[in-house]
Amino acid sequence: MNLREAIGRLTSESLVYGLGQAGGRLVQVALVPVLTRAFTPEAYGVVDLVMLVAAVVSLFAVSGMDAALARFFYEAPDRASRRAMAATSAAHRLATGSLLGALLLIFAAPVSTLVLGSADYAKYVRILGATLPFTALYLFANEALRVTFQPWKYIALNGLNMILVGGLTLWFVLGLRLSVAGVFYAKLAGDAAAAAAGLVLLRHTLAPRGSWADLKRMLRYGAPLVPAALTYAVLTYTDRQVLLHFASLEEVGVYAVAVKGAAVVMLAVTAFQLAWGPMAFAVAGDPDHGRLYARVLTLYVTAGSALALGVSLFAPEALGVFVPAAYRGAAAPAALLAFAGVAHGAYYIAALGVNLEQKNQWLIVTTGGAALVTVALALLLVRPWGGAGVAAATLCGFALSTVSLYRVSQRLRPFPYRGLRSLAVFAAALLLAVGGWWLPVGGAGWFLKGALWAGFVAGAAWLAARSRVAPLAAAAGPPGGPAPAGS
Image 1 (tube, rainbow, N blue to C red):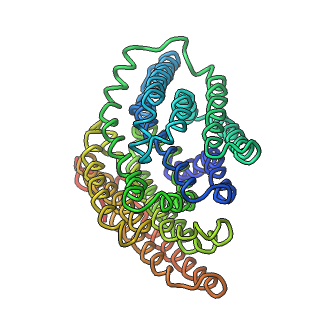
Image 2: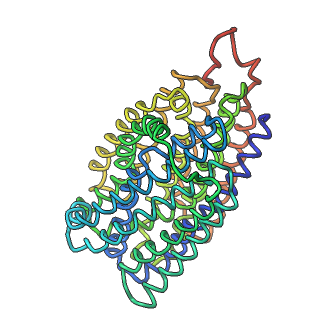
Image 3: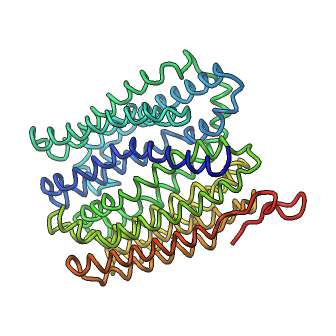
């Protein structure tokens, strides 16, 4: 596969997986105008914090098996071995999901007190405990469909979940008036149906039984990712906890709207990530894979920065239309979180040297250091700047995590990246976004912001076109030497 073909395939698969992911994320965004009118900011904050429990626990249910499946699936010698590996991953996911779900059911009150500051919300944690085994299987089905390159089944599965969760949320909250509990009952029903449908779609991919040898091998690869998942959870979810304990539950609700506002960027980032992981490992044996990795980093940062800048500039206008006045303080945090999402996506390109060398312990070191910085900055900035302060801390954490991992990966296995140019493009977009906060909202502001965004896109595209990586034979340097890291 040549470079142009690989980029074209990555683009098309990102669009396809984006359609699959768009379902769930667009439902979340589409429900914002409804739920922000049905719930006070405090109640909306409760929804967000309880959903974070599910997100964090799901990281431990995965236990790195998603990365292990992508890493080893195509190293299996034949179809029967691949089916056994997939069945092993599915069984592991169901077992860990059931165990962790049972623990949530038993310890719902302490978890509620820890995460929300009160045991009054334990009933919502119990619903999530019952949901977790289904969520674990549903997520496995998504991963298996990606690894086996079945994008249209992936879209169908996520579309089913989207329709059920979105429709049932409206029915339970507005029709049956179940209030906050209706959101979680809808997730339970939607994930259960999607898990069952996923197993049907994968019936030809799963063997009747798994393999203990595969389980041991995959856990050896994935186990170092569990502490990394913990540090990632700290990096990602510190903002809400700091806001809860040093500001108010109302601020958490407003911040939750900012997170949904940045979902446009996260949708694109997640689509890229889902398409990129299997492709990056699949082409790792190609002698020209370093050029592909380098070109992808340049194009990703250029497109991601342009998208984040657009979201940042027009967030005030969008919030003015879609949410009540009590939530409109979400504009500045949404802008910063949009750029945090771009930095997060670049992490998966920067990590390739570590992944391919199977030195995943470095993920713990780099992400752990970034998590400590994030916590310190969030505590420092929450009182003067509230949601914008913790969003800035989150952005700094993701950027630091990606840059530090990039440096480690380049030492382990260097690729001809244009790292400094990509960083300059990202920084320029961020500075323009912050400057845009002082532009008027609506009216003349539309024209000024549009001109600012178009100017950035033109300049970044020109720079990306000049950042093409030379063919491997020309870029390799002295015989036997590594490809240059680039600037």
